Length: 338
Image 1 (cartoon, rainbow, N blue to C red):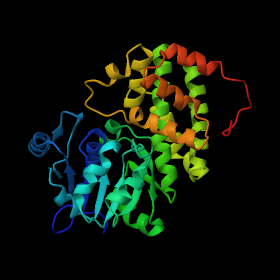
Image 2: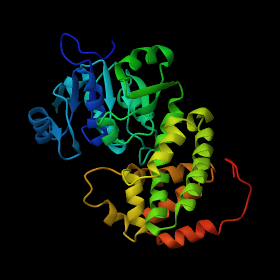
Image 3: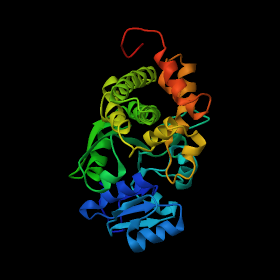
């Protein structure tokens, strides 16, 4: 099925009505197709259906009338295509509610599961073993996608070309352009690691260390992403593409990034607890950093920037001391494996 509206209603659904999920639903409905959007909160479902807006997570968007919200996961499981956008740490428990879903399951959350070290594809394969898994990742800010601004993403398909042929027409829109990849692991790793590195870049901003320092951090952070990704079987082309380097550059450059804004608060002297309190949205990098650092240590992969973020998140040293420690590291040759 293509994801277009069928005689029984929408052919595509979005699970998770946060900023990113709402933006994806708005993009998918931009050509008049029917889209079903799942939200946990009954009050939010009512607001979306009656007022066509999401004042909690995406107040800038007036939502298309063809978006129908529901809190019934069974209704979502009846659709042939689901974009799954719940926060990474809740993906498994929520996905358990769709039963024996056997359609196309497109993972849009970026992270690594705390406690298990599993990528989202591994979590989904256990929670929905009959589903055909894909990953959508790339340089995207929710408010820009909702506004219809030009966006390009990676759509990595575990089912290869056949799955791409089904999903591309369902997801692509004139201003939303997916590019095919068969490297699901690479797309997932890029999305997870860049969240942690965005926190580090936010710290640079919060400390007022300048653009030179941020450019250097992005470059050296990309080297860490390459080291980790290649060790886990990702393809170099994926890591240097939209879901790796592209997403890294975007999220390391703007306070529109939740992870960047968290890092900025840390650089300005707030504790992680203070910076995270009262947020309506989730900064995934704060949860990913410790498990990513642990995985890297066990595989003997050097990731000093990731380790620095963990030090800050755990409150073991102030930001200036952490930066000073990074600058004092031994001099060596540049390259992805150093």
